[in-house]
Image 1 (cartoon, rainbow, N blue to C red):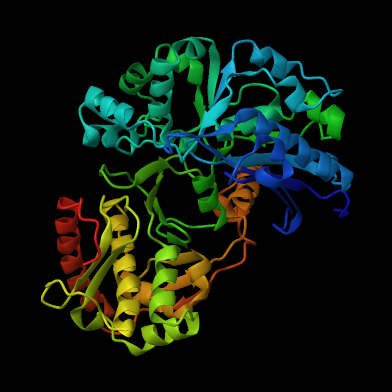
Image 2 (image 1 turned 180 degrees about the vertical axis):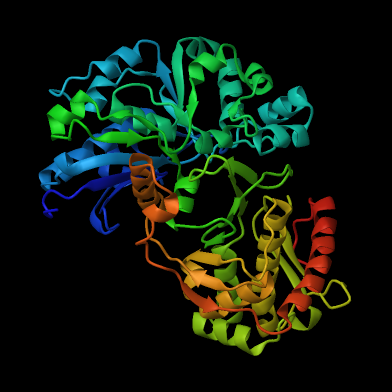
Length: 533
């Protein structure tokens, strides 16, 4: 096929701070990247980091219309650069998880009758019953979380139904808050979208359905039946089922591009749209995993993903329907104390040098001579605890460690926790498991060696930039071609094996994990301790 006629696939990522577009061809080669940053490209909305933090410091929102205007700017830039919209055959995308959009009654007809003579944001300016969308950073719904848990039989019961206990950022709790505190706006809401399905709606010119994977992050979906939970719906708002609409598989083709896009930007009229999903599920697709893989994203916060054949109910972490295979699941556990904690130790103990930090790791023994440090610079998610704690081999508290011991202690304790909670969420780590490491710390081979030793499995580096947008490209191709996902990503760059477990590591860290778990439990039971000891 001539290069000027080759098929193209577009992946969009509506993240917290920007919209990113990535386009690939059939060989999975990236042929275009375009981005619009909210703070700098749309200064009139006065966001910081893409959001508005309200005076109470717990309510965090983003103007829904800003996302629409950013999408206009994105498409206009691509058009000005001569992007061949006519060669696109399929589009999918991702949205920041847990954000929600509230469409006003009558907006469905506006979407279906868009004119190419005006921009999207001009036509949708008055289309939202709640102008400011609550997003994942919002923490104002604690009362609603407890109320939802109580109404369904407790936090563990809610986790059994929806894959997670009640979490403030989750959409069901946000909806409950709005239905209770803003009943008139709730009443005139025609459709409630997630950021992902909202973005897809802009492409198809109609309300797009919520996909099963992103829908798993709402405390509303029964992840066993793959349907809305009647108990959860009833608890969160009246007539909620009709406001949410039907759900679809994450690889479902939900329609073709709208006449608006065809007329204004010369999109191919036959270009299909595959259901959009959350940014975390899309990132899972972006690293091209296989069943049994574990993905560790090492960033400001650390996140551990795994692809599971079955789901388990726990109070920590989350279970989502897998965006690649709706018959399986993905687990996700997030840790607030990630790279910033590692950087603090590097600055305090290694003279600000990662090379010296790495030397300390290489020259200290596995198991750190029995010393264990626990580092919760900020309030951790699991356990709910804060403080810096040092223990010797007898589990006695000590005031501090030598610098080299401190460096190994922070990496060992973080990775023991990552593995421990991942296994609690149903992921069994064995010698055949592949650990795919991404994020900034995946460049540090000394840290990767500790990960390999602690997990007892080989570590592969899979540093994929813009993994949510790229994963959306893969998902578009997967949905359109109807083949196995492994066939879609056959040309995906193979990750490099960079570390294998050292001899004796498994037994050392098995014993250390038992000790760490007991120490952490003690801290959780005394979670008000906030001083460095």
